[in-house]
Image (cartoon, rainbow, N blue to C red; front, side, top):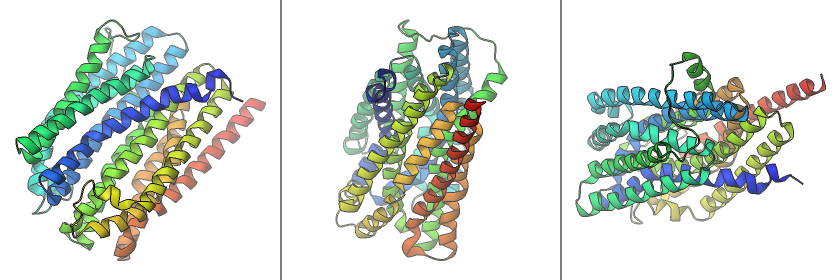
Length: 442
């Protein structure tokens, strides 16, 4: 029986706000998709989905800088070094401001070529480039709001993350309704609604850290590249999950266009948006676990470290099984959120969803393991699992089926890749546990 320190109540106190915040964070683009599909059309939905990898890049950049920062700050706080935690936090915020400015300038100048690179064709390039051009103006809001949301959890107020992101989500829904269904601004309105919602989120969290109520505060600092070099490897695991989603979206868009034609792109759009939600839930579980594990590492509390991993795996298994069951029993319910019932693609999309959904359970375990390794400070293991999964095993499985011309089972590529990734993750866990046991006995 677990102690109060690592009870389920403690675990869920961190995980529930983290999962809720991640789901709401991803819901910005999903709400856009629903309004665009219903208010503009299926090709507009495909156009927005084609632009989704850019959102993944923004989210990935935010995660890359935020996860490592939260881990190092948690280490410092666990060791009682409050000043160090504040210096690292402030340095990351300044770094985000610089990186965001570069991203905004680059995408503003090359929105249309970027849309073509991401897979837009003659029917969708107008929608995609328009969405990219508007969203990129809010790059700093996407990245900084996520960073601050992660840091309020390290600051000891995880419930504030859910509250702040929830307010922003409501802003996005309201503006989507106004801009798309009332003012008929179509894709331009969807992008503007998303950007303004992120602006609201950023201002909310900035207000908290500037109010004097937070434990962590901004302070003067001397830029230390060494801290940044420690931060980036620790963020690679979760960052690569985001970049993987973007890379796979790009890859699937090109594969589908070549195998089935550009008019079939809405099929993957539906799958991609559901996959985004599932991935965010799994990441939320992992990220809720991470500060607990990191604090336990700082205090050298080995029993708690293992129990937190067990709790995360159990949570992933429960969520994964529920999602899998729903996708197999009622895929039409999910598809109907984005496609009209009389769509010529409706039945094909439901069938594709059933196949693709088989990958969600092994994916969740791999995500939890990657987060666990990062929280331990095992950046090499975390990076190997995440990068191998996202940029080798999953794409490799997809390209193999594509080269074989297996259009009828192309959606099973995700399951093949995720099983291979899970095998790698379990092998790395076995190696780590063996090394930890030998260290404890020595």
